[in-house]
Image 1 (cartoon, rainbow, N blue to C red):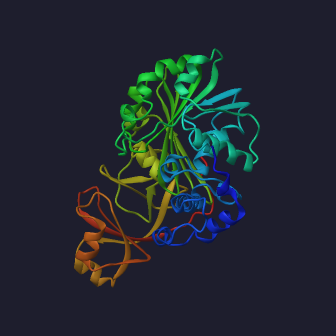
Image 2: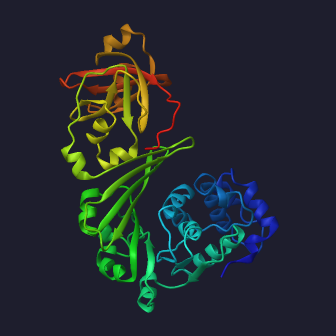
Image 3: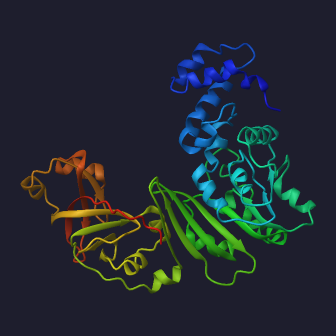
Length: 402
């Protein structure tokens, strides 16, 4: 049950007043409230801090109760949950790993009914309370039980089953392989497909794509979702009737635009991009495209030249709208200290692509301070020559919405 004392106005004011406080010092001072432990207050403060960027709708609402950090860590962000919700429809979706409920909340806006299954009574109660605060639709049913066990009791076939398996071992260590997660979907995939038309599986972004598609079988689509150029989630859509290769969709969501690019692994294998020396513009694909491994396909589809087989940088004479970062090249020169000194470059942002050494090592070696508007790309060209591309960011006016 929820401790209603945490919702007292004076307690909520204390939490808000200490969002920027040093938690260690705060804990040492002890709780100003007789019936609430300082550690419980610290959990609320720490989790609410994380929610400011991750879950702005929760953060902006009064009287939200937050779970411990681990539960919030695995929860989807608001943006990724909204994206997943855009993929579903139908009468019934069953979330068998409900947790803090962020995904269920947004799924409820797209389906007639959502069943939120969660073993932890307190976490289920917290999700239910928060949904009331957020004025969620009244089409969410809460079940305090194991989601897999619940599926064994129903006869109605769902339109969707959603699961986000726990990625912690019994010892509390992070795990990444599908067979290490709880529940292990590889053990239950056949059963799940008897209970639903489609399965949506959220996994760690570290998984090997080809291996996972092979393990899961029947993968209809894979969505690689990035927020501000950082891969956050892999979303596998599994359909028992899928007999074709998995369509891989890459999505990069930022404040101003959403970049989308799709393809099949076979297309990447068969792509024949052009290779060339650096021209006037330089391109870096976004993180989702790089995760997908569409190194050749992106060059071919956007008619840009790849710098070399193992250098995932691209170039063109005229600017093109591209799903990633775009730079205007100032100059290209040999990767030698005297060449940088000759040009008076003492400060720049350093990036390393297919070049020996790390950025920090190169800063020290070449005497470069970090920052400023200039970018130095240490890389190799198609002749395997070590070069530096000196460039600045280039802004395209139109959004990329392919």
